[in-house]
Length: 228
Image 1 (cartoon, rainbow, N blue to C red):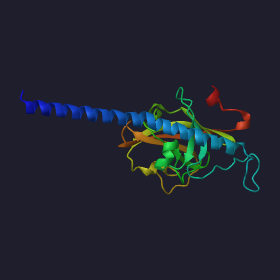
Image 2 (tube, rainbow, N blue to C red):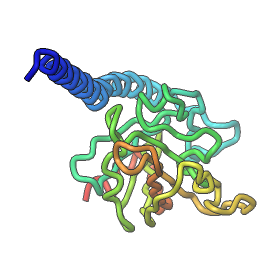
Image 3 (cartoon, helix red, strand yellow):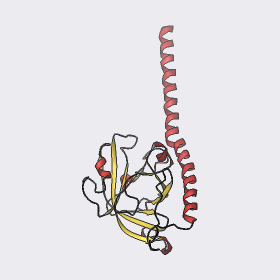
Image 4 (tube, rainbow, N blue to C red):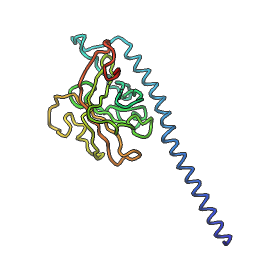
């Protein structure tokens, strides 16, 4: 082998090694470092949410005591805690208001202008599946009949999963108050969870649909879905 050819081969080999190291470091950043960023944000907004919930409740004037306490619409603030008992070892996640890039780095986000948890209409949550803690990583395992629980300041909201589907990123009809029917008046209390599909790709969206099946005051203890 000529000296020139040996130099070329050595150069190509060094380049491939460098590219491989860069890709490895990128993967470590995407899968590990972003998770640490989100864990720190979850601690911060979780502490804020617990402090808010510990303050005296403020209901609209004239509302009866049993009425749910309104949820904050402040962007980036925690509004609820997501529990998925159907997925073994699933850690609860604080849900933030908003789905900007910054919001989703902090945890699952509630899409602004969709119904708040427990309200009539469609409450839509979005979250990462592979980076920033991957709160929705295992949502492809959810099947009809599984339960999802949203914890608000004074209520446990239990939703029954009705099914899931794969859609395109432009399929905004899944976020309508009545999914797929833009002009219909909502009468049900729905929960829709969206995330990227397949894993490590944004080519499609996985959509999990659920409907409110039970509401319980937190003073009565956690619902059966969390204790059974």
